[in-house]
Length: 108
Image (cartoon, rainbow, N blue to C red):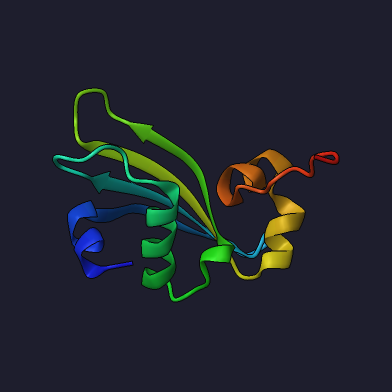
């Protein structure tokens, strides 16, 4: 991830909660992305993982809400202490949405 993308996203952490019982941090982030569309989950995950010094594998993007007509998005993020806890807590559809788990197909 280049520093150029980090600069253009203009990330602002609005809310940060420590959830010790579920071994995670819960963030509400405001991202301004002038002259660009809503940033991709992978871009956001990379920026957040670098900012919090963790693996991108431990970062879940729960929701992205873009403001209509404005270059702003509210992003709800969870950062887990480890991958095992993440897989135990997060529903399967959230894991598929975040990590693009490919379903096994029959014989081709």
